[in-house]
Image (cartoon, rainbow, N blue to C red; front, top):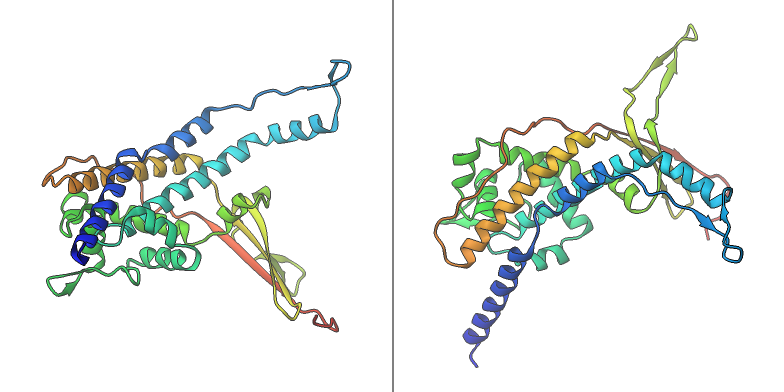
Length: 305
């Protein structure tokens, strides 16, 4: 078997993998979960003594469950925001695996942590991510053309049909993804409470206190940073939650993912034209409010191990 035959077999395999993926992928998966979560209520539970069969009216587990059930609405709002993170991260991976950078399985497996964080920062700044440049006719595509090419396999399609709305959607969701405090708090179970974040005030010469910051209300968490020398910093973060806005963005991203699947399915079948339904008339410019304050401490006289 020649090298060209091997290359052709590999390309056919990769094309088949992608065709199967786009045929099976559910672009409304995250939105459906969020919608169900928005309408669900926790079930009632009871504890029964295994020997006597008696249903216990008092138990420490019941006390904990009662508190957790009372906070369900807060947990639901937080989880809807987490689903928005997951959905938008999937959109970014879809964008990256367009043109010659796929298949999706490769990008989803190799783009991690710092590499992905750099992509988020580039997209929110409307720049082509490093390593994903596309050159057509000897000229590198500008950001708008690049995004259109990655989404729709056509560098001219984006501005022709969306008046920039799709670009704003990608840019604003990349901005959401570029700060990881809230989603990491969700993944690692460390949200401390829901409510107002840190309020800083300074006392003037008359003894009056004046606020130094606008207090953000939402999910709060604590991050700990420790150096080899045992110096450490503690950061208090807050991210505003808005389930109504998150639901709208989940639907907008779902519609765009759906369109991408239709386009890539048509390309894999060699079709020259496909009808898609893109999200439009959704609100833009609604950035998520955040605050983060970091306090550093130096330990004196502590030996370094």
